[in-house]
Image (cartoon, rainbow, N blue to C red):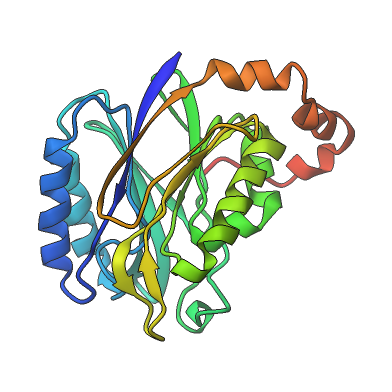
Length: 261
């Protein structure tokens, strides 16, 4: 079965979350013929927002979805919850919201000084397909994606905010994670923005397939990357590549201690 994926490559304003929210809501209203819509990490901007504000934005996006048949992957944002700050995003439909977190805040950019590691990483089932999300640098931990694939995830979403100098590496890692787990992997990036240290973020969002060959990417311009995902390709590849079967049968300890959040 085919699913239509739209990845929003977003040109955010660094310190104006309200403007970013208004712009994104307008984009969502205009998306047509989509089953999944993926947003980047920190598309509201690099600031920490209160949980109430974050929930209000999620609610506005939920109401702006043009169809009941769309699953929105909201991207992840720094959110203040009581005594801690986490990086969290959500799976959003017209009727349901389920949250996922960044498990390993980045050491390289100093997130660990203020962001608490998250715990929520559900496999979300919608319209007959199972999906999950790994935020930004969590993609670099093969154990995370492998566990999600063993739990049945067929599409792994990677909302991220990656500088231009790292995008070649990111695309290679994305292709590897997709092929070694025989899943689709979709990454959304911001564009026309920058890190606090001046490094430019210039898009190049992408989708990688379970065969290591399917690959679709975009340029540096803001807009929507559209891709059609033929889920039957997963079974075709797995009939030849038995990586998940081998691990699940010979390394069952990988599943110990896990729970669906």
